[in-house]
Image 1 (cartoon, helix red, strand yellow):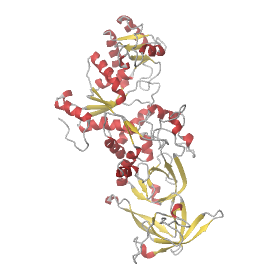
Image 2 (cartoon, one colour):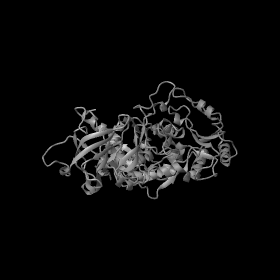
Image 3 (cartoon, rainbow, N blue to C red):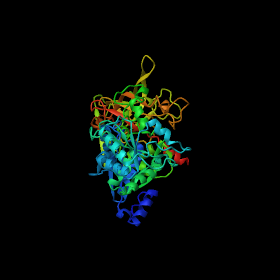
Image 4 (cartoon, one colour):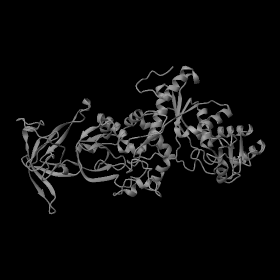
Length: 574
């Protein structure tokens, strides 16, 4: 029966499944799968597909598989397999014991190919790649039959067996389906089923000299695993007739392929091929003003990969909420990056511990505070979560504030420190600037202030008001830290928009990274660990860098700033 879960609005995929269940199609089963190729790391677009594939099965209390479509050993690596498994688990999905590989089925796929040959539905073709493309035709011109199309079943079986045995060089022969070279769908013009590739496979070793093509492998792997609904992105819509053809010709279990629009995101490229280029050609670090050896790879915090987003400090809950918010559509569209950041802020606001970090420190000496004294002040960990409790932070005669929180000649709308001005220190006292010290270059390097002991509660007993509240850290106990501020990897909303003779790399943002190496943060952050979320008051959300941070010298990545562009757009009705 149909799901009664109404937490998320229905969509056209769920409507199809509801009808299938009503008609008892597939004996009432719902079984989906996510089938990545292990030739790169997963990105935010894959996260949407995972949430649709696995989330649909969860909605109907069905099953879902993770299957690696590992049919091209020239591009596949074990490190990608491991990364994909880690990423999907991090998102919160568990396929239990249903982890499969297309290579698990190589023997069976070979027998399926033999069956097609015996049935006169496949043949060995000696055309090379260029000739095959020429014979294929175009969108406006029909293709031509291969001169090898009418080989006998016996000759095709013999040649296929010899291909498997490794008798012929790479690229010299292929096994092709015999369908229709005049079809309006180019995918149906005698597609290649097997090609010769004498290359070891990461799971099968040197056993195979031929490997099946993706289209042939994909549908039959779905069939073998008993998948009921094969959910995939729109680029496979034109491949659906071929998906159905292979299954129908072999008379095996027939899953239903359903296509949905893939995710497009502003300031982002989603092509795995292009992401591979960014990594392999060192395109990211080449634009850094500060060289950091651990950056520039698949997990660079500016990359749209799940490993990059995780390192930057995204929560899996925010990504799943984003996927739900985007929804499931039939028509491709581009989503504003601001929506992803909005969902992230919404999530981190509930879970992030509020702390104080001074990114560009300016020393303040509180002249009337007792020398040598340090007191512990209570600070709320998260006002959105009463159960988060409080912590103690040290306060003493010398503190650091932000350099931008002082102005020698304050403007009318500047409500922070200036000569003779009074402000509130977060969780502490009111202070008033009485003097400042400059270096030989005329730069202010130190402030002299007084404090009012009667304002420890954060308000004055005489009722006076102050307009500015500053964050700060205790100078003698502050922890030295490096902070990395990230911006969009691409400077253009549509990175594919380039001038003639250029490609998308011309739009890489040269200012996508700023490194601040002299920051001061609360001493308690020495115990911070990867996977914990923090809001640096007034600066945004931050996390510990999983590669470069050490307890004695922490490195913080800014996940996202506090400015919610999406919320402002919604208020303006955009």
